[in-house]
Length: 399
Image (cartoon, rainbow, N blue to C red):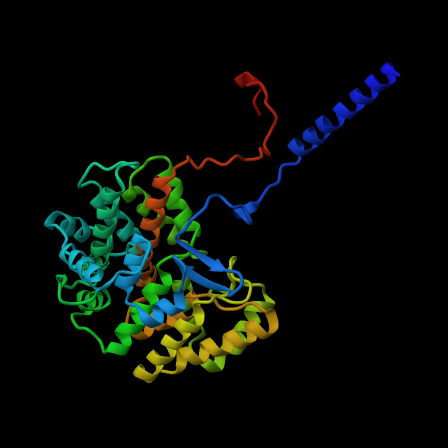
């Protein structure tokens, strides 16, 4: 009986070892990290029960309806909405930091005029990082100061480069204007009607944050190495440039300009669908029932259409949306209404993603602060698919 019991134990002990070996041979690969939960965050979440993006617990559509971008920036950086005293202090500080140094302006003036504005803003942010010695893991107060400094100066960098690339003199920032108003002033020398400013301000709120998206995750990876916030933001800008991420708003407007008229829209979209062409501005990995930000931005597009009297882009929007939603079941994302909205505001297409940077600096900074507060080096593994280890042959035997 004792011997029989011993054999049974041996057999039982071998089974788990076989299971472990099988798992090691077949790793669970998640291309694009789909479904992988890398960490926790208190900054934002798409609530599954309401399909709504929330910032610090507040639905983004409610924030867009009731708050200014400055209030939302404060919320993301500090964890809650400001009272009147806190908001006034935040505005005063942000406005006081808008100016660029003469050296910084000189650097921007030397950028190639054909360079994409995303490349120039990435480099302008990097230059700002050379003006002090910064490392990750410093007191949160230091990075908060840097975050507000970038929030203040990035619009000035973008507008300065915009003026220089068009052969115009730069326009200095004003301290008596909101962030949205000041950006129009620095780009065009005037502030448009309130409806236009409001639509722009809303777009900044909607673009400010979106959890562990590609650019934010890039910023957190860089931060996790104990690198500095300027490097993290520059890396975020590099990730945002891609048309599968932030650059999609530019691609949407390029697509609409290629369509040209509403009369051509249906034939264009059906040809694209038949030939399996990539159609920008539709679908989102996170949203299953449509992007919760779209109705708010679509309303802004409708307001801008009424203001401008130009219905062409809204008509094209509606034709493409109806066909794609009804026949493919795929809904527009935020980039789809933003592209034509920015076009009606008067911005050139290559400035759309830098405007995205103006907004997302708030989300990136909030995540940098959060990553530093509870840091662990982000270093995933990979499953090797190359050649087995081999010897280096003598040169005479190499093919």
